[in-house]
Length: 210
Picture 1 (cartoon, rainbow, N blue to C red):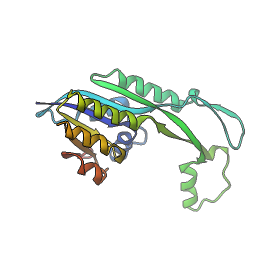
Picture 2: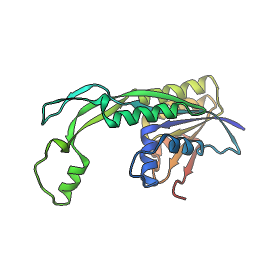
Picture 3: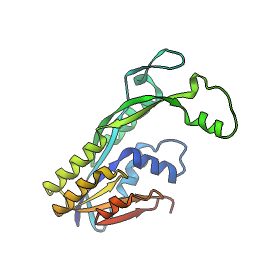
Picture 4: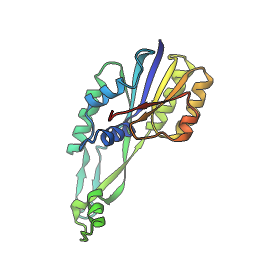
């Protein structure tokens, strides 16, 4: 049996699950956990740990560009649900949360408003049509550090990586040089970048809709 660690880019995994399972919401902690467990081949692999990488919700204040009012994002429904998701997932067996932070990137017109424009519903935007965008900081760095740590210390024989971030290629190369096997997981219809596949030992297809 190969002692195996599963490393999951949470945002990428959630988008793939939502798309291929045709969910109208973000997947729950239970759904994420159940699908994460299925990434391993239990006939050949013993799950050592599931590392889940995500960003904690932004809890600061930002001024709305139209209303000019200060909005406290820590009290929003989105932030509350995000905290509950991470808290629940972190309590599950073998799961280690690795959380960066979400930082504001500025206000943009919402996807719903842009979709209405494309459908021919042309109207001036109102306050509700603006949405604050965020970027994750510190998530990719944590994945790379853990890949290197697992490989250098030979804690595991194999790692399964769920991501589409080619910035991790150097870390994957280092893991293979240390004798750790690397598996890149294809989640449903989300085919991994060819650079990731090139620097892995295996590509494993996980068919969600089968």
